[in-house]
Length: 455
Image 1 (spheres, helix red, strand yellow):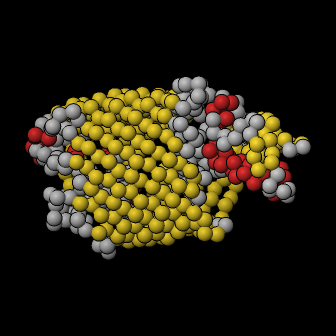
Image 2 (cartoon, helix red, strand yellow):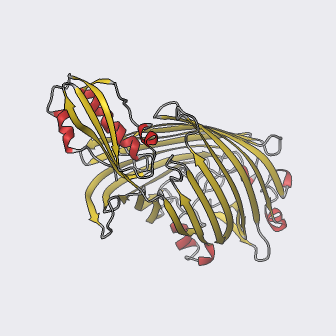
Image 3 (spheres, one colour):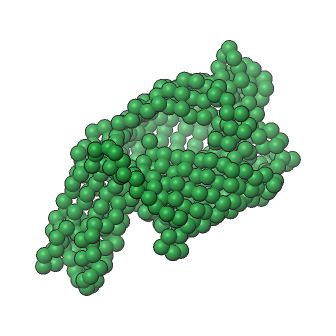
């Protein structure tokens, strides 16, 4: 996973911490494809800086984490290579990831593995398959090209290109994408028991969706990022869907077109973005859908994660989020909230809770059980070792979802509470596998499997 200080960093520990050091040079090795300026963009120091020895120690640590969090490397180290009469030379060594991935695509359409395995009985008809072609460092500028060709339960063609830096000062970037998807099966409503209701059409598509979007990013410094996005969307449903739920779209329509706008602010100061054990990640967003009264929707929200060490091998993580929508008309496309994305309470994998506004809090205690480095048989300098870390955890989640149109189901307008224990496995490529045994306020309990990856 993350790189570590080179042994020569003991220079920082064994000398007077109040000494002033001048950075005389920065040397980078291991980057076959990645341009030097992409790595230097993540450093918290530059040639000519004068720093106290204690300050430099912290900046080496921060720089190592920032370089790793670009997602370009499987390992990196940042250390003092030489020191002579108060002038130091900094060495940055990186191991690049594999950037080209023509991967087979096999993804469940259900919200999580447990819903597919238990409620849908592991049906292969509820699987998307195809190929996902990714080039994650196309020109060495951390630019990404992704092509998805998907068939099965849904059909999807998706093209996306992102270039994080388009100006000389490396503060501005762009992202452009196109998506076309169609599906025979559709979640058309939510039941009084907070379950998704589905219908499957054999001879026609239940829903067809098209989208073109353009994003602009502004990164004035290492920890702050602003994103502005505009998109044009066109979607339609079959006649039978409209008959089942006339309020799926506004005004009982079967097709809508709309422009949406999104602003996102993100602050990142954590050791490892995919699995933070120390630091803070926070974001806030403002979303505007539609330019007419029928499709009009405003939504604002915040999401934060704070992590801190308790001992050398244990830490806690506190996560919080809140959001509100306005106006909240009783249309199905306006209502999704709990059960999607990070608005998921552990132990409520089989439920969704629609609403106008909501908030959640999650507290997790972690204890590292052990770490292991697997030495691969491959003759390569970059993937000769694969690290694994295993964490035991205990957690409790709470949330509240307000819905003015619902008053008689399990979870709306009530405090939701879950708790449990689990095991996390963390490895390279932002791979995180979570085994969780959870309980909820209804008395439900069970073992749940979740996974994520940076592929």
